[in-house]
Amino acid sequence: MLTLIKNIKELVGVETSPKLRKQGKEMAQLETIKDAYLLIEDGIISKYGAMSEFDTPRPSATPLQEGMVENADVVVDATGKIVCPSFCDSHTHLVYANSREHEFVDKIRGLSYEEIAKRGGGILNSAKATAAASEDELYDMAQQRLEEAMRLGTGAIEIKSGYGLTTESELKLLRVIRRLKENSPMTIKSNFLGAHGIPMEYRRHQEDYVDLVINEMIPRVAAEGLADFIDVFCDKGFFTVDDTARILEAGIKYGMRPKIHANEMAISGGVQVGVKYGAISVDHLEQMGDAEIECLKGSETMPTILPGCAFFLSLPLSPARKMIDAGLPVAMASDYNPGTSPSNNMQLILSMACIRYRLTPEEAFNATTINTAYAMGVSNEVGSIAVGKKANFYITKPIPSLEYMPYSFGENKVETVFLNGKQI
Image (cartoon, rainbow, N blue to C red; front, side):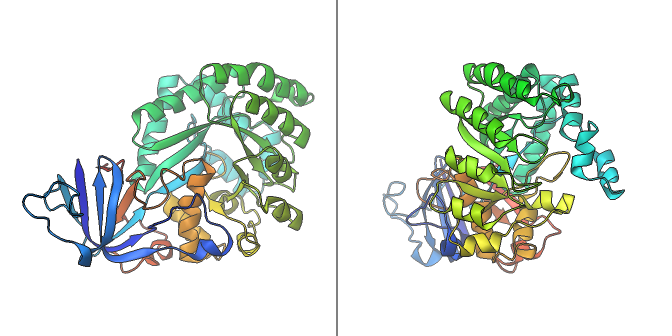
């Protein structure tokens, strides 16, 4: 099947020599083509360029023989509209059973995230509701959230477990994620986060819970092939560096690549242990020092900032500008979850990248597309407009410029979504 998008006001994120990620000064580089076309064949990007290059083929020409196709199966006129690669959201907790707006009010009244967690709220609250919900109920709720993310321009997403905290509940969450993978046009990666919180009954001997994660949960997750990644919340009041190292080592033995929640509450050593064990990303990073930045230099680990969480909890801002100026790559994801970042809107993350973290629009686009694709191990497939990649992109409403995307943070600028070359 051939699909042609023509008269594109501006085609964003094109790559003639695709990179797996962008770092340092490269993050300011965002190639675009004005007055462009985009050609998709069987769900894959096959060609793009300026409309001035558009040649009508001879009547005898076969598809793609002369470059352009006049008789495509689908033709979309994008006059006045911009085409961008779909957002890649590399950090979400999309499968959960209940919202937590009552804790939102507690925060307004002055309680901290740590104080709410200590009295059984936060993650433990969601774990209790998840245990009571059926797999079908969780799937139906998650499917609705996934569809909302697609409408807002997200085409690839990583989904973590972590609201189970028992073997059976964690497996239930991961099975839901597997069903989403099977039934959604999105590119989805699954992450086993059994070490997301410490159940109340293990509070005085959390090493026993770590043993449960290692000796029971990980083997069963691996036996069913339910997780692409293994993750740990390595932070003050949660799991220690030693706990984290033990869990990551166990996950690696079963073929799960590490990811880390690190440095949300304090400088925890999570960045260092993540780099040591080859984590594909270390996420949160509200608390960062020079040692953490130095540790990330030369590594394959993607530092991933979660602006929605910092906004919702009034946390310090991760030093994104300092990291980029030091030559690091930076990714920005939603952290969509019911307690600390109840928004799956990556357009809002794009705006926050510019408004709060002082990234240029070009840097912000790279942080929410190619670098987040890298942080979930799929930047060879998605995250930019390149020949051979999946045709995952969105067409905006008529807007004045590319800069309008982060500038206008209160509206949905996406008009049409294509995933795997098909309009959603």
